Length: 112
Length: 112
Image (cartoon, rainbow over all chains, first blue to last red; front, side, top):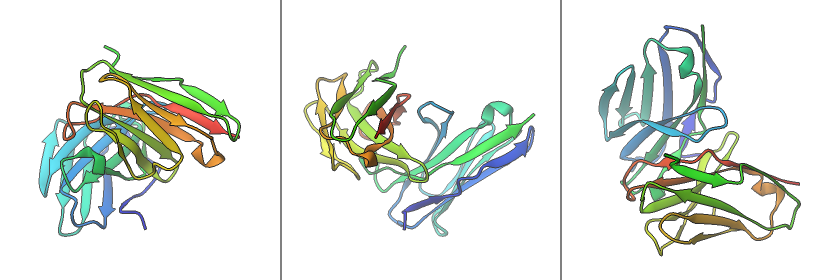
């Protein structure tokens, strides 16, 4: 069983809707949680980064971590067609990225 | 500003052939990484170099070798390619082992 599980989608939403993404994990040692966005034929780019539990907001993006449930979420408000991409969660037990574990990614399609 | 540059972008090999994937970064980063991305599997770390002169195995190192040629360049070598090594390979760099990763746009490798 993989340490990080993520629904592959695709998740299709109309423009302006809220996109809700999540990952579950099994390793209770994970402390650092990240969300990456990956456009087709491109490398991943970091969107959000949180440490331990709680919420973090950055513009239209909100990341939530619930360590008691081993569950993390990313919400995208007022979604735009330019948000169409694959979203990868990633997590690590330490602040050394040599231990980073990625989810398989969820494909999001925002239709005009 | 190029960031992380990977060459080649595409490559087709026959089983048993060898090749080297090149990666260079112009951000003066200390740490560099090689990942592979397969459908449904997420990104998996092959090797990383925390600093110039050091390299360490990641999650899936078998069949690969790496060289940290200097601070800018980190190459990945397949000595005898196998069909199981068909994948998209991403190089990444970070300022330190606990700074965000910056990814290149990948090398798409097919082994027949």
